[in-house]
Image 1 (cartoon, one colour):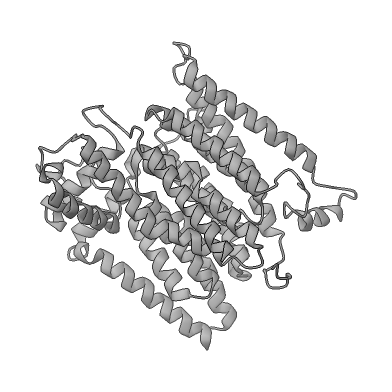
Image 2: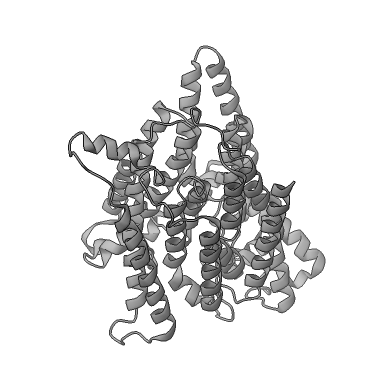
Length: 507
């Protein structure tokens, strides 16, 4: 009973913080002619409500694709259509064709914020609560702590309720998928992952581990008996989900091709804004866009992404386990973010969700990562006038995390899940130990550096000759952190031989 009361408090606190953040500015507020992501979401409601389905992804006089053309999968379009029907009932001017472009009012802002709030309350928050409640071999205290930290993670709050997006929908669906696969509800898990992928194409980050885990599970059961039956059920589930979502766009080859072109805009180049990934960081030293052709950029991006995620995916396929699945989610998402083609700064949220899933296992490194991931979006948040909201929510998250997880009490090899790796290295280098004290020092240096850069970005004018100085420094610092995190999570994944079944249950 006490556990559910604490969970209720965590949810109420999370909802309160969400609504307070929503009182701030949003992307593109008062900035014509394109405005920002807020207008993009509103415009998609306008298009899906006023135009036939077959015209949603095509350029026309009524649908100028240069003005926030729809470039998300069909399920996002259907969600926009549902929101549009509600908007039409309240005030038709909000979605009137052509005349509603750039519409801004307090009433409309309340409506748009409410659509995110309702989606979050229906999809993401219940998944977080159930996932934390049903964590295996975890104390009640850690379950509640994980829920508090996940619900108060500032990155998602600032993007969905500040900047304005619906990441809570795709991440919530992905979390339902993890919940399903973690408890052998394979059909539910498969369906949830398919819906997530049909809502946001960036969910490809999570789809590869999902495929490897289920393939390994089927092979382990034997492809002539139960394994074959499970494989058939999963294929049918995935096929049915995709067929329902894509049915209106599969009547003509031209329709399907156009949707795919919109979802994967290869022509936009390797990267655009100052995103904290490998390519943008490398570009500060070597102008990669000038040195390589667009085709070469695409090939190098694919090669590095594939090689970086291959070890974790191979292990998961050969040795499928729930623990390995969660760590492979982290590794694959981080590999995609660092090395893949055309990544946005907000895509780090797709890495943050899997990291939240392992908060109870490696709290020190997980909390550190979540702080860095929020910091990496600082230039975008400052652009949206969310400086105060960003600082307050990050400080609040840090305080809650420190109170929930005594992260500095025991930063040992066992707590960091590096004991197996350390023992393997000791076979070749006697006396080797992971420098845990250096990690504590590194964390403090990292937090200090991020704090200083945040303060300078807010208060100091950059030199006229270097107007992008602070965004570039944020990008460099964040990407170096992410590369180290990629190494760390791969190490504990590849050298962790436990599958979660042989540990004693914690009451």
